Length: 327
Ligand code: 5GP
Ligand code: MN
Image 1 (cartoon, rainbow, N blue to C red):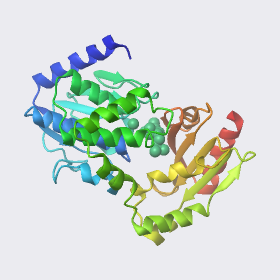
Image 2: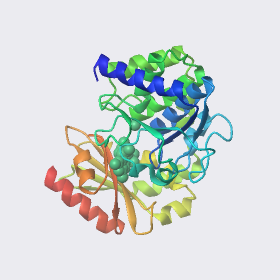
Image 3: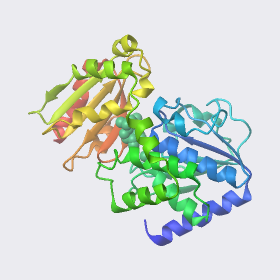
């Protein structure tokens, strides 16, 4: 993104924000830290300008992100927006389909502003600010807020820090750019509650989640000369431990953490019956976005996902076949 492109987007968006009153914010299904942190920061910014704002997502908020949600009532039911929005912000979401149920509540005549950092973004908005080189959608939002001369409050800084720390994998993934670290420093200066974030997001594991970890670790398998690792979570395992599937996103980091593994695959029974949610993680230049695309999914070069119909064993075979061809 060049300086001028950013300035054009900032001016266009701020102009719309000034002209309208009723805003609706949404994001992709199974919202993650970047999605929720970006929504909350933008919510505070728009409320600070006196606008009417509601947020709705297809999926519930994972437990670990609830501490940044300001009180009850900012999130509305995904089928029932509070009022007819004039402007819709779709954050961290590459396609309209990925909005899930909230697609159905976007008024036909609403202005859609699409802000995202996925390579697979389909530019479905009236305004599309898509920057793959940004570590998180939260980074783009920070440019927008600064560009619009909006004061970054501690609540906004905390939400944006959540977006950045989670999408960079606690500043370990290849998207940990110098800018990502500069932003983290800036956000702490602006009052981001970073120790609380570390505790809430990474160090408040419920006991049953640790028990689920034990079950999950028993499912680890290596394939393709130990270059691919798989791990799965079945409905039975989730049922036995009482863990909500929405709280299992972090399991995707386990298979790729094994020495020598180039692609890690997490398979979860969590969507429709007989559908498997796949999360792919990779390293050493191997592009998993291309693999997810083959199954109608997408994401980034080193982190992507898709959903495939079948049992875990069937789906694992399908994904391993594609991965082995590409490795
Ligand atoms: P995760 O594996 O954590 O669900 O997602 C990793 C990345 O891939 C995220 O950026 C996420 O938005 C994207 N992603 C995951 N599943 C899908 C999917 O089914 N379709 C698309 N287009 N992107 C996905
Ligand atoms: Mn993101």
